Amino acid sequence: MSLRSLHRAVVLLLLAAVATAQSGRLRLGEVELEGPLRGLQAECGGGDRLRLAGELAAGERLQLVVPVPWRAVRGDEAPAFTWTIDEDQARGRVRWRGWRATEDPAARVPSALRSRARPPVGADRHTLGLGALGVLAAGAALLGALRRRVALALGAAVLGAALAAALVEVEPAEVPDGVVVIEGSADAAQAWSRRSHFGHATVGEADALAQLVLETEPAEVALEVVHDLRAQAPTRLAAPGARLHLCAVVPAPALGPGLERNPGEDFEAAWWRAEGEWRRLGAWPSGAARPAGQPGLDAPGWLATGLPQGRGVLLARLRAGGGLRYLRWVGGD
Image (tube, rainbow, N blue to C red; front, side):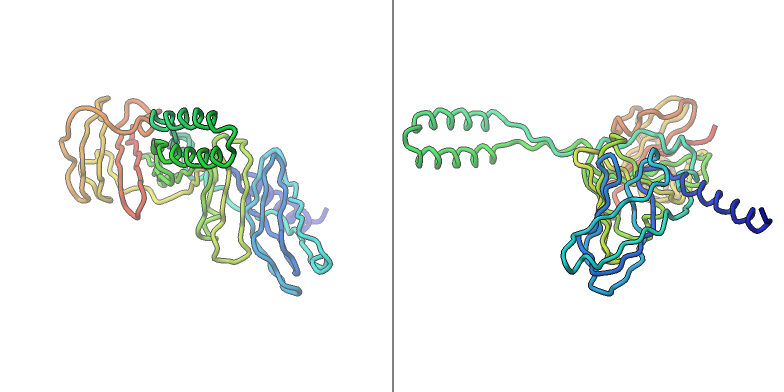
């Protein structure tokens, strides 16, 4: 083997190592499309599916970077695309160009930040109160009395169902959809951001896909990715009944080891642990000294779960940008 061939083989091996080091449920690949095409999709194993929304006209060509639902057990196997076939569409072409070699964002932050408790986002709970149960019971009795009069029985059933539905009690989810948690530590130069959704999520910027690590609960739930052929359209992620956590590396908050002053954003509420004792600090404006606070902890249970002992901890709630955000920061040894 020549020196040039050996160098090329080493480079290819390094690229393959980078590409296969991906964490999370998404991996980027390149595909070349030639119209006419529509109804493009790829079955990716384990119930995972990639759909490309939109269509290409005859003669239209497009080279696209696509996020593919990916499981490590599949190795480097390429997704097999199918599309709607008719007399015209049969002339369309799809060529898989290969997996894109990218750095794994998760490798840039300590595993301790990535393994902290995730927000238990979920769907609103719908329960039948006594009023709704009473309407259903009365409706059942009325239907029995009207069983020989079909038209009246049908009208009573529709009316009773509508009334019972109006009386259904809705209990909001414990953690609202789209909550963001910034995970930081005095030992880490960068922080880990996790935006959590239930069942569905969107990624608004195409460039963000390269920096995104998608986690799902359960880890092996079937995932559908809908990627639009239009460059600026959001990518949609769906895993009904599961939690989707969109993670990325972000700048670490500018917090000193002693955290005597808040140099960052306004905290709507904050909690501080020092020497094993928690204090409720209340609101803590940007630039202000740390409030004395009161003994105790009334932060959400999941937020204070699994934190290391023997180190200072700051928990804070921020409301900015139209969504609910938390900061979870651990001081140095």
